[in-house]
Length: 378
Image (cartoon, rainbow, N blue to C red):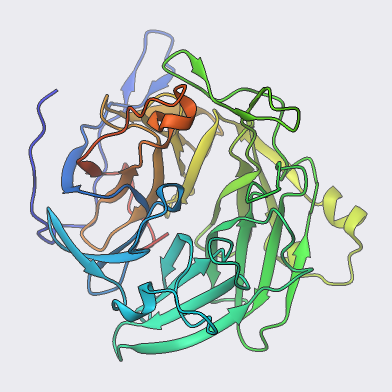
């Protein structure tokens, strides 16, 4: 399929495509054609947008990149973000970015980056960089038992209404197998944090294979034999009224949600909190999540090179598909009215193909016009 490489003009925000109807009057979502906005030398993980439309992205940590986070400077170039120093590990210090996948920007232009920390064995942390003042905003550390051996906190929601961060820890870092996946709640003001829903059915992976191009993705098990890859809670997002938090294990057929008020009720014991979680809808195995003002939920369908949409009637639709959208990962709204999604090619890596790498440059960032406008960088 031929693609057009685009520059990044600011375009109108609202866009509502027509919805076709079948003979039995069931709505069918129209296919949306994606466009390539960047071709880059490193695999892109997640993408964030500042209010002035700076595009900040993580280089996918699966490939151990030298530069962890970058700012897009043209459709083919980028520069270290926030600078080279913060992307350079140093012995005897931890004020650098070690291992970053998840990142988001808030309304004040502070880019919040989750440093998982296990590449150079430092304490995991959430780092905020103020792009308006070009300075460090704050660091929230996540030592044990907030994180644990195997932790891989890799996506987040910024809740300004309740002054909280919500992080998804999929528990597939070194030594992890997804069985102790959890959510992490951090108070913005005090820094106090809690690990919740650890090992809950809503956060741990289901026993389903992740299958790409007919091949089940496996990793060496404890006995050395191939074992299907299982990934715990991965995507996480929140509605515009900060009422519901949505989340899901990557390996699983269900999307869950919980009322934010319940999640923040520290008087609820773990068993009672678990009863507050509800299954929202069916879904495929997926990575990133996003949501629009109407309450439609977007997800990256990692097996089918596509982006799906769960409409407010809780029905699933494929809205974007492209052969080059290999392992779509981060998905996020931009000030230009588009949604951006990365094609990280994780499923093409050598470890999933008997030692023969099928991933190749350039690595792509796509964009598409969503059916409804949404919240920038969510």
